[in-house]
Length: 493
Image (tube, rainbow, N blue to C red; front, side):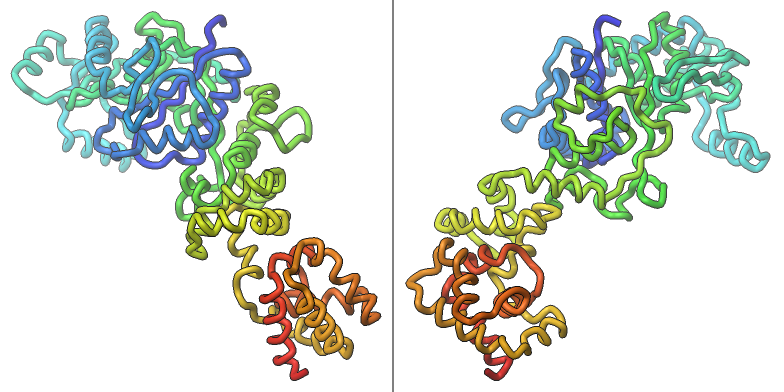
């Protein structure tokens, strides 16, 4: 196939779901690998579900995730614009195009006018359910001649246009993930192609758009698999070549149920707000349903493009494991420079502690040490203020066991030596902090656990934590003396 062209075609009904991002990502990876084009099209034929701002949010989420595309719908200077030779790329702007092709199907006998009321259709479905039948249209209006149908429509009678499937015909297609699939037309409904409001259904619009835009591969969620025979039939009816189909497994939670809002974050916006890095989310998401040839788990976008193939995509639903995502995210956080992390965590510190920009300007060196200290243990960017609490907030002892450590017979001597050595300094520099514990050991003879554990507990309230020299520097002279004195008071020494 010469021209490789793929598309991501979301509906503007809200935030971009994590499953939608994975679909966009797989389209992007394959298009880039094959030297093809990737298009963003907006499918807004269901105007009842349109959400203001949803298009802008979709585009913003894709940009944040680094999932780039070549043509279609963009936002520039706050305005929605379309770029490319195959527009419009927003379906509601293509109604005249769809009408032309619907009329062609009707004239060829592949579609027909249906005048059945909603009440009749509802009653029909109920009867079929009671009889244990699969609900589908009974073809009543197939018997209406085209001449009569046009007259009734001209007289203002409400109608839809339905696909006219031939009886007992096998429709076959190949799916790159699921192999060869065949479904008989007797098991398929006469799908509505044009609604009474003049808008096409998804089934009509997607076929026309994919053909006119030269789409070579249709990569979408497996929920569209039952509809694919209808689309394949429409291609046949028009005399067009059908694209290659790829139906991706659903993104599932640990209970093997579809990922939903009830189980926490599901939109790209949610994960962004929760402090996940885009490269971590995309790296992890690629592996939910796709497995590379190697055991490699950390991939740059370029490495994913190089390694990606649909023959390594699973047929079964991919489990979205938040613990594994956190592991990947932690890796990418550790890879960031300290100055990068300051910028990335700034909104969370501002929100948590109320800091202003001046705080970040005047404490840049101190913040670099803070980031170096906490980033080893940061699952998300949002966790940074919590991990840094030891430097900003007074503490309560974490456990009774920690209090027992402070009752050691060497502790009063240790606290006294710490306080006097810190008080003797004009200012506690990083070099001072790095040499302090060795100095205390030499002076008091206290060493090992008896030296380090009580010191850490006395100044942070916790027996575990980051590098002690960093903690000493970050707390600074005044705060250290205050905390040591508070500990002495609690111990009555």
